[in-house]
Image 1 (cartoon, one colour):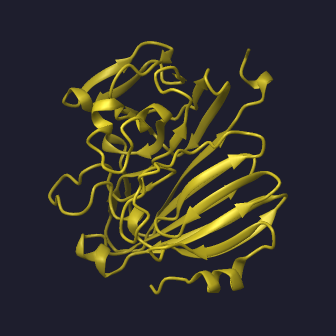
Image 2 (tube, one colour):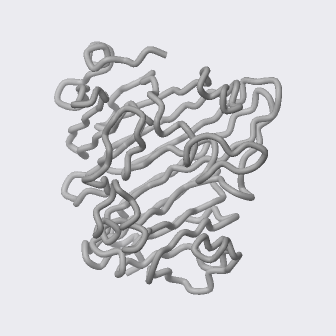
Image 3 (cartoon, rainbow, N blue to C red):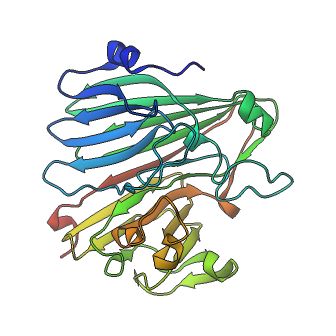
Length: 309
């Protein structure tokens, strides 16, 4: 598919004083949203939301200042779209990039509109020669965003082939925090997880509150619960509610891991925590021909009376 230009997108979809498109150095096209409800920025590459800031709030999404904003390079931060495998590819074939190919492909913007000051966007990604070379022949992705005071992201996968489609998926959200060592994560008690820092040992979250004390890389399995992120430094709580997702991944590389990532500052780990909406590992999805699966996440800042305080 030929990449849509900023001029084409502005002609088709721009909304005065709300939604506009521009090309940045390096050739990537971005969309900027400025409304009464929020500011946001996203890239057509990866349909990648990198900034969302509700009015009167600190930014909710973390973007590394060292991220490579270049064609074909994965962006460190925001909400990368992970498909069709999570992490390194495993199984009969092990070729292909980390976390799949969707986050570095150019998506097509198919729809944009404003309703009640929320901006509604729909992006499309189809199979192509590159995906077919990796064994993914006949799929279609639709990625719907509703961006305003709250954030709703819905990823739909359609199997347009004649054989079953097996895949993993994730919305790999990086959330801004005041200090990763002080946040409290709730909603995962009595849930099994695989500890990637301990040879994928299967463990169980016994405590009501998860606090991070070192490198953390945990796919929590068979859970559809809402997760809360309590941030005493920024004095706010984030809620991450989801639908049709049975895996929640909590990740932070800590100082040792950050030092190995060229696109993350050495102290970058202190400023985010990833709570990812996913279907991965034993929760991977298999679609029969002509079936569709849709996974959704809803991110919001609860009002004080909603926190139970």
